[in-house]
Amino acid sequence: MPNKELVPVITVDGPSGSGKGTICQRLAQQMEWHFLDSGALYRLTALAAHHHGISTEDEESIKVVAAHLDVQFLTDQSAGIKIVLEGEEVTDSIRAEKIGLDASTVAAIPAVREALLQRQRDFAVEPGLIADGRDMGTVVFPEACLKVFLDASAEERASRRYKQLISKGVSASLEDILLDIKARDERDMNRTVSPLKPAPDAVILDTTKMSIEEVLEVVLDEAKHKGLR
Image (cartoon, rainbow, N blue to C red; front, side, top):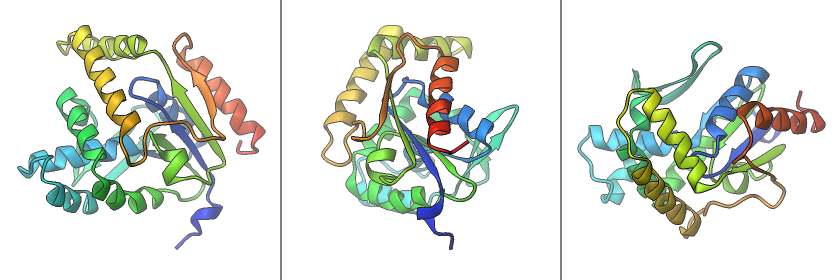
């Protein structure tokens, strides 16, 4: 077993739509490090439960599903990150709005978070890990070399999500997306276990008026200052 404490980790936390997913994928590609989309683990748990006919209200069964997730994050320099659940690529299907809402419900279950905690830490292997989530810097990797917290206004995040869905030919309502984002923020920031908040030593960036390239440049500069590049 590798010593996890010796493996460098960069955590990027923030609410849905803050840009952390894109930033983390770009970081993983440029630095050639491993990638963990922790939010996807909750989406994957929700999707696996759906596939097996298990209600997100059945906490005991959901815990078992979480503990036995068979998932891989495959980094592709040209196609980005591919997510494979039980041998099936589910990169796009886990992004459905319904799965996202169920994932937020699942993430609020303490037993599920406990079941996934060690699974997340096991992703930290050489040469390093880029961890994308909501409590990566506060709970999962509190000793991370670099912690980043990305934020943006709810309106901007809803607009980004709306444009993303429309570009994929998916029918969407900007008003509904905004309401969903605000509801998700409320749950994530006020849950009793691992609430969404920046780590005390995190670099906090408001990405509302920043491009992906601008955010990436700031984070790469921070990584360079930490001797990670």
